[in-house]
Every structure is written in C-alpha cells, then in structure tokens.
Image (tube, rainbow, N blue to C red; front, side):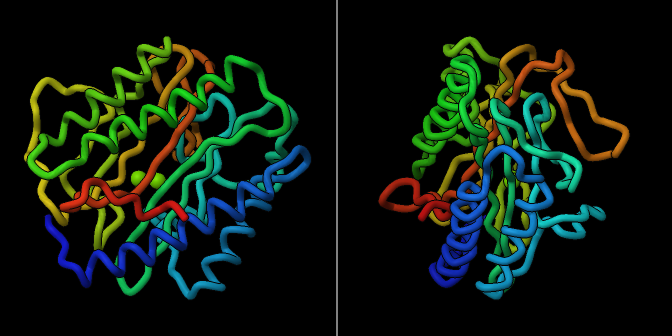
Length: 247
Ligand code: MG
Ligand code: MG
C-alpha cells in the first residue's frame, strides 16, 4: 500500500529510533557481553525516545531485539547465558513504533577479531542488501529486489535463505506483500512512490537449509555454517529509495 507524506514522516521517526538502537547496541558489542545486555541497551533507547517495541510480545517473543550468533540465522532470544566471545559474529534485529508506525532493521557485527571468511560474509551480505535497495524505484517490479540480492550473495560464493523473507511495513511490522531475497520466478507487483518495504537478506556461508530449534524461535543453518543478516526499512520515493533506518 502507498503511504502519504504524513505517514512517511512518522515512519521516518520510527526508523530513526531503530538506527539509534543499532548504534547503541553496536557500541556495546565486545567479548564478555551477554545478549541480554544488548537487549537492555535497546530497551533504554526505546524508553528515551518514547517508542514502543514491535518485537516484545510479538507471538509471545520475550525481548525487544533478536540476537542470533554465528550459525543462527534469525530470531534468537537474548539471554544472560549467551556470552559473546572473540571471533563470534552476532546478528541484531530490532524495531520501533512511533505514533502507530513501524521501523525494522538488522545488522551483523563482528565480536573482536573475526576470520577472513566471516568478514567476507558480512561484507557480501550487506552489499547484497544495498543491491536490493537500488532496485526500489518507481515502476520497477518488486522481485527485482530479490534477484539483485541473490546475484550478489551467490557471486560471493554464499547462499540465500528461502524460508524467511522481507516484507511491506507500515501500521504493522509485517504487511503484505512479502519480499523474497531471491528470484521467485515471477516479477511480482509494480513498485510505486509511497510504498515502504523492509528488505532483509539472510545469507549463509554454506547451504540454504534452515532448522528451527526447540525453543520455537531460534532458526539456525542446517549445516552449521555461519549466517549473516542485514535489513533496512526503505520507502520508494520520486527521488529514489529513502532508507529510514539509517542515521
Ligand atoms: Mg527485522
Ligand atoms: Mg523484517
């Protein structure tokens, strides 16, 4: 659906809070910190900004961010017993609600020094996100986003997760249509000015397979290989894509 200028202004504000959470949690990431510590950092930013959380209570989710280390793809639950170690990678996904409008974004960060392969996975996954964002222009077809993401990820020797995808966003975090991070075989709907999407490639160092753990949330790679996740909330505008979740 297309959002008017007033709605876009609210989404811009929500996106800014998400970007601030990214900045604050990134600054807190180091060996010895627990993923519950990162959740507390995010809660503080939400409180300071008077923003609501679209993660807390979502189908019963118990935290305001998802924290997914190493071979975990998405939806990890912050915990006092998950302590970051030198050489880990950690994916942080979070959102915010301002005046009923949502923002949603994710990043994967290194913990201390990481392997060259892990570092390349992060670089390629982030680059695949921006390749997808570049497709968000008036009149283009939605699935060109996934085609561009997939091209970058696979050229890097990595694979794109199929079971979890991006989405339209507005007065709810997850709105229709979904935005695959791969070419699904059809071009999809035409993008129009005022449409807002969360684009979120999940890229695996190994195969595409995923497994859901017994906690009912944590999704890991089936082969145990590393996985990275980058996401932004972006509007299609007359001047090209506008990223809301970046400072
Ligand atoms: Mg997200
Ligand atoms: Mg999302």
